Length: 292
Picture 1 (spheres, one colour):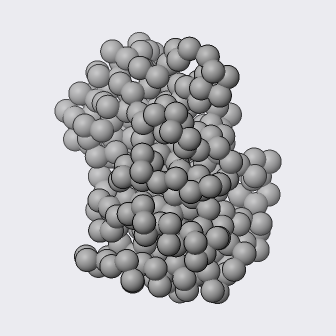
Picture 2: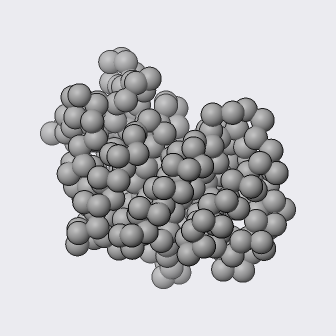
């Protein structure tokens, strides 16, 4: 993956909770066309740990023939080591070398020794893989500390970067050629100023144009014109469960987004209206509907 602004893209489901592969790819395509450098399927926002392995493989194989395939990336979202290895091997047959890989999320009290061994086994079985660590303590019950990441990278050069959603790495970790993507576009500018690679964020599916403008203004050393609005928008979404809020917002324009795999749910009606009202104040919703 290159430097840039990426989405942790949504998975769109049919009424029977099966994955709507075509709609999911089409949605990711639309966000790229609106400014994103790429989209990552099967992150936490993509309901990755709730979606079955066969559905993930179906999407991977379908995306391989898409014109934007070089801008599509994948997470694993598997608690099983063997499923993780199986999925990566499958994806690499279609040319997908870069993978966002988080630790298993089921057990509490994950240790550095255990997590080290998890990545070691993946790399031993698939030495050509390129891994982006997924640092999200709230989800995985494990936080990657800077010294531990240095050890992993030293032992396994296949680990090329990290998505930092715990926000303890981007200010404290410096490794040559190691890319740090911040998990919130509200911290995008600061991450870039510190030498970071950009952002991988769920809400860039809404703020795609704003986030891209912040990135481009930084790259061109121009005055920032959209960062304040970008941060305010993210702050609104952070007041709610991100998956529930994002699908509630997007379902106003497209009913494809109304389905979530249990136990996930949309926002209650009153909370949805509250969210929409706050976003309308930021000019993200027009009188005719969603503008973003």
